[in-house]
Length: 112
Length: 111
Image (cartoon, rainbow over all chains, first blue to last red; front, side, top):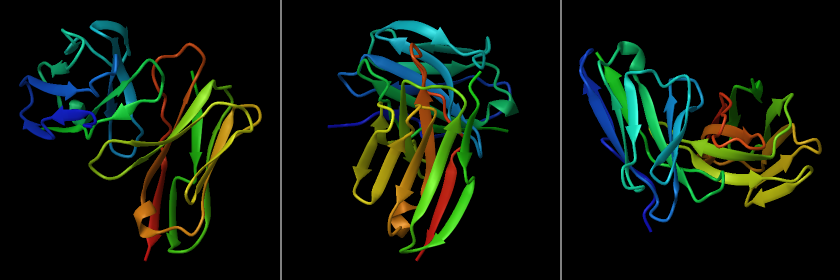
């Protein structure tokens, strides 16, 4: 049984570049969530999918951020024109119709 | 807007000691989850509590949900170095789809 996986684990990019992260949830889970975590803080909710539908987006998710889950399985999170303030750990979680969310290892983004 | 407080923010203890960390809010929650997170990794789910007054045990860890479902505590007996990590509480309100995390308690257990 595999848990939630995320790729890449680490990403260093220059300001202004676009980056894309991938999340593969636990296979039977219909819900998928993205969170962002900065140093010294708990994870903050960004967005949530039920199957392929994006049902909720946080105010934290600016226009430069877009997330997709095209076939209701894996998801991608893209950040366009990255800024230094985007540096954070991006966490993906999945659940099966409940709020018991299981997290992946995260993608650590550093914008230089 | 939820206001969630976890205390203490930092805790450093010797191996074998007992400790309790707290998660408090003025809001009533439908459920609450505790996670442990190690540096560079995602949070790992420890327990979910749902009923006011509920107590759950996971080996040396005891979790309690307050009677009014506004607070929770985590007690660790005979702490071990492997317990070191960031302990996060994440309550949910009725009808909410996402978790709201506190800033956590960073526990260090010294061998």
